[in-house]
Amino acid sequence: MFMQIAIGAIGIGIVLMVGYLVIAQVKAALPTVDANTTAALNSTQATVFAGFGLIAVGIIVLAAFGLINIFQ
Image 1 (cartoon, helix red, strand yellow):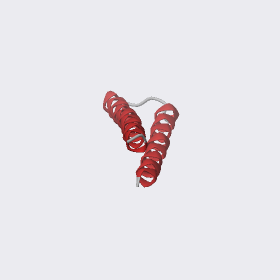
Image 2 (cartoon, rainbow, N blue to C red):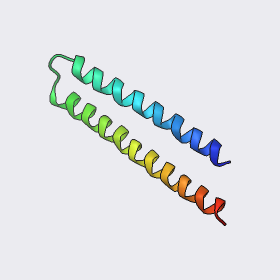
Image 3 (cartoon, rainbow, N blue to C red):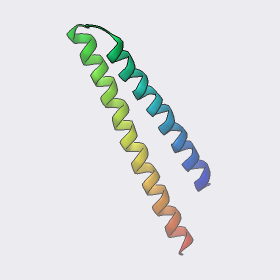
């Protein structure tokens, strides 16, 4: 069960990483955009970056829970 959850978390992390890279490339490719577009892209990047943090915390908690069960 732990392995399935960990693989799912890693999969979500990969999707978030690809999304972050796509948004970064779109932001860099647009020559000059207005303030609303820049704010929207920055907000999207921040949201995806926050998702990275949540995935990292989830993996750490899973690892700790797995170690607790192993040493019981």
